[in-house]
Image 1 (tube, rainbow, N blue to C red):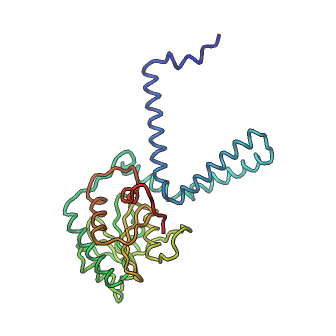
Image 2 (cartoon, rainbow, N blue to C red):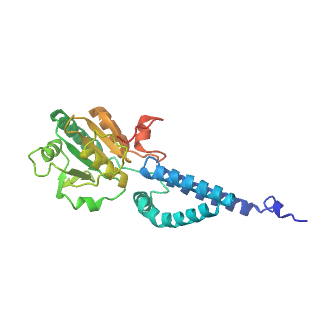
Image 3 (cartoon, helix red, strand yellow):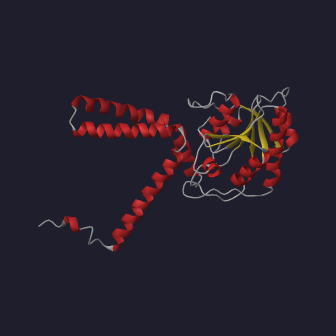
Length: 280
């Protein structure tokens, strides 16, 4: 009589605990990986892969020889292409893992952050009134060193007047991004990668596309002022929130940069409730 099916019932307590821990760890890792993909271009690619996997299983079940042969070849191609397609997400995952952030929450110290944030907000408001385009990047955990090298090193104290002068139309550094790192104006005139998201609103110009592009490759927050409309926007996690006033911008920056927060969702979902604006 085969009683192997009863082995789980009579397993030792240690085996049961070990199995629960094993399942919990794998579940958490999958959950965090899905969190990294949520709201990115890779999310749609993942859905497509799941559909292809289901189609492969169905074809195998019904023994469709030619279809199975085709799917086998496609999966070989995918094994080569997927690391390239998911490069931004893999990079973010490895950087979080290397910095010890993958299994913990973020913490941003609040050492005189209020004054620095108010200087940034004041600059954004003044630039918006003047309809002067601006792009201010605030890196967090993920390094963006390769883009710092494209700009001019300043290492200056944050001030509204200095930020405005950097974006003044006749300034040699106005046509680029300002990088604010460790509450210092680290670089100016930096060139950022443009997003390749095909679903963006066509009204968005190069500044907004550059802001979304750097936020897709890192966890940076980016303040954008439109040169055409004077609208203030904030970009993070590849998502954009537009038509902000100074008070709202200040509140979001304070919450995002100055307190302990859970990484259960993106910054945008925390501020828009259950809805999410498309990346436009």
